[in-house]
Amino acid sequence: MPNIILKIINNEYTNDDCITNMIHYIYRTKDCMSRKTEQLPIFCYGVRTFPPQYTYLIADFRSVQKSVNAAEPYRHLWHLIFSFNCNRITAEINNWINSIAGLFGLAYPVCYSYHYDTDNPHCHMVISTISYLPDTPPLTDTLLSQYLSQLKTQYETTDFAFQIDDEGGYYNV
Image (cartoon, rainbow, N blue to C red; front, side):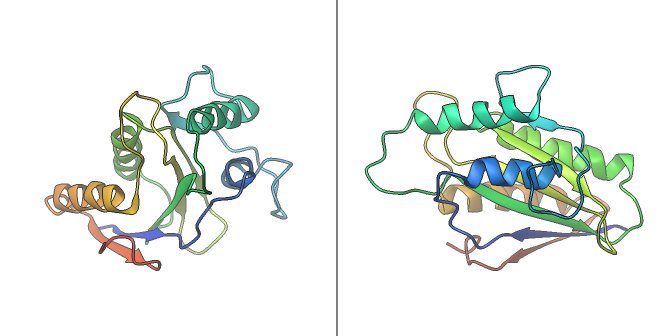
């Protein structure tokens, strides 16, 4: 049975470059700070441009953020990492991650990529806090917690051992 740990990264992601930096990082483009440049395949939901490309993906995330006229800095995104205790990403794991991205992607731009640079393969997922749908509330820590509770309940009936590592205390809001 695959053990899946979801880590919610404890970073505020309020600066103007966080979207660009995160997308370059998760896809390992030439502009990321990593030693490796891989230009990984783009998996995404809730974006306007098809087929997706790195620069258009960044522009799509930013255009949604610009729809908000915030007086104060606010969280632009959530960064989630799903870590797996296996040697490779199976079709079952891929389908599971895709369904999670699709759930968030019904209202919020989301993109993800798999990394194999540690002993356990893992998936980085970036979710915009601002919806592309009108009159949809921002993805606050409270709303994220509701989504994660729904995921945890849904996947308790699968063959996955699913746990949440919430270093910032967002899940228990």
